[in-house]
Image (cartoon, rainbow, N blue to C red):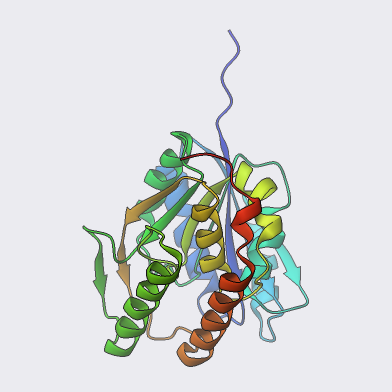
Length: 249
């Protein structure tokens, strides 16, 4: 009797000037996946988008150290650009990505992948869903995050509760059918993926996560917020889901 092949997943780590914590985070991730993701055939891809420090060198060293790690180098910045680039490569059943600081507890990854196995198209970690636990987030970031998701719900009438948590996974269908229509290459990528995805009828699963703020994060709140607002305005005008409905509801 032929043994059933395990479903495959590629976990992408988009990085920009993360030399200080790259090796430690990759080591932590590899140990977790080796112990807790045995029912999947998994791989880790470090997506370096135009780092100017030693990130690329360290990433290549890690790819030699671990057989399950590879590196993609992009000459332009942008988290969305890096994620889209790697997700399009290979023939993995599931594609995931997470922030390199591992702010989201890794124990939430297996349930999200199992949700995809059950038929969901997109699985996201949510810091706002009931049961989530958030530690160390500043008042400013908390206000901007809550206000942002409120805007999204008000103008787009969607149900998801967290657009910006850097902890997401999708199935192959999302890569082939939805990703070509996601235009943003920076931080708004996440929001656009979820808004257009839900409005088009793809099924979203939310995992309430434990999330610990990283005080050394390189995210610039004001600049990111302005990019998000511009992205929301673009979607309100273009409404790409009008031609992407799949009758899932």
